[in-house]
Length: 309
Length: 311
Image: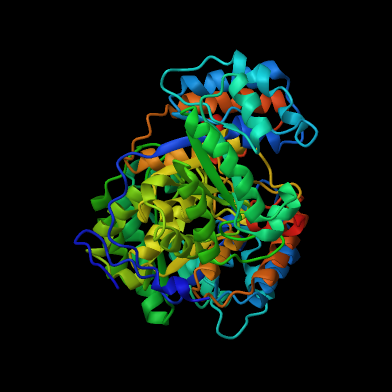
């Protein structure tokens, strides 16, 4: 039976969860070692084989700012696009959007922030200004028939501002949604969130944006990611961002971990009987491959445990 | 395996207070490769006492033939400074150990059962039934001397030999320990394979036999599932959690993989949720720092890693 509580949704979990794999972009972008294009391409191909349905492939940000993604065009053109799989790319502005479409992108993503200071430090403009910039992109994308995914960072805390108000998060999410983003990914950028804060923030956001258009992007810097994801699922979220092998450290805490590992998320979801379409052993192969190329150990506990048994 | 699609927990408010049971000095150190000198153990326990932790598992009165790391049990127990706010249970697998423990000044003991027959055989060389007979003796004697006994049930969510374990079997063993006289039974996910669905199901069955106030969860983080499993347990009404400072204690069944969940990470979650524990997180981090240096290893706690690295 399903007992409703006024404050939060009934605790039935979704039957299916869509995993948005951000390893090749968010992961690799935040790794110290830069990998060659053919490694990136091979990684993405292996991830496609693992059954993931959304794989963030690269970023059309100027290589001046993000040198790790300088081979954006080559990667886009080099990957094998599996039917039914989406390969979104980041496009911070119109220029990036046009270059992305030119290189064959069929889906793009834009990145907003719920914190003014973070916006200033990260992309050198206010939240409002960034949203105006994005609106140019979403208009162009609509005309071109290209779906746009929106990201909101700092939803549970900011490295500069500290606490972030759930209403501010809701406002930014709402703006991205109204300008045409089909889905909004809510990012706990520094991983400071805990289930209480997650609940509060999702309550505020889901008043403005339908819950089936929301995703969570949890960082595991403080080990809280899976607990936060579980709470989000209980609140009706059914889209989860994660990164193979937990690629992508935290730029705000040197050496600390960042993205939650896809393997660990999938392990939890499958253990719960939730379908993801992901083949965990093949996913772990992809993780092993990229860790080898990066000459680093995996951040995934499932991968660590499995190869040690 | 769709039992958990029916993952409907009663709308329970999270508990206001969670009792933390610190197992680092015993479970943690026992499962570390490096052995630490007695004075290091004593200092660790003393530092942990300063954090406000209400229960600190100090050592084990198992024969040093089997567990050499705990050979100094008497010395440790006698030398630690016992805070008036904390209790210091020690493991006592049999009467011999129990008597030694009491002679050394133990005021609380713990016994270790298993929900898996094969695990019981391999771990303590006897069946579950026979182990219960052994524990009965200890518990009866302890009762006479007014010494509380805590029970542990290992393999509550899976066994390295048998694989999945029936929740009914777990419930049976928990019930026996409780009825024999254990004031609390800690449910151990020994190899960390549990996920929120299997945790919820197991607890549902166990709580039919034993009240939640007499239960604790002892989650291993081998597959990264510990905090999610603990969260689930809290939602089901459990309010006592075992953990290990710095995540000490690897997994003996998966070489090099992690084992115990880190106390720091659990505290961070609980405090973030407004749940009281009475424990000072920064002092736990200090204790973790100390023992990791002594063991010459990195902490397993993500909170400790993040705190030491942030600018």
